[in-house]
Length: 198
Image (cartoon, rainbow, N blue to C red; front, side):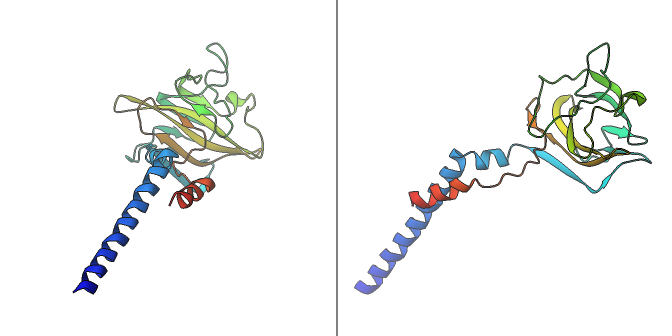
């Protein structure tokens, strides 16, 4: 009988230790922002294979089978009520997307003056996009009356604009960084912090 009580006591102790380890792990992940960032609401779409849309296409940010931004040839974009982060100002370049670098914050502070249509090559005058490297278009879209921010990754190869992927933040008005796909890797120091605290 005493052996059985001791066994049950030991079993409960192991269970409590596992439970406390789980609690410490969860607290550590939340304190490092891993779990909260992963649930931030980024919807990511990979264009597979990458596409220049020379015969038409578009970007359906919210997956409702209706593209928010379309193109008939990969160069000229129809943005409708949505906006692009413009390369210029209200008198010049307002309808040419500005190439953004990875991790640029896209939010209400962006130069969102381009509406209706846009041209990747400034209507034949030459593109501001760098050749043979990735750049991003900042996008402001309106879904169900809410303003959302997103990005489209573009590669200008000297002949065509190749579109690779795109994403938007589902939290109305919230910022997104160019290239943020919503996946968060565990920081290398996070697991070390969890192990040392156990």
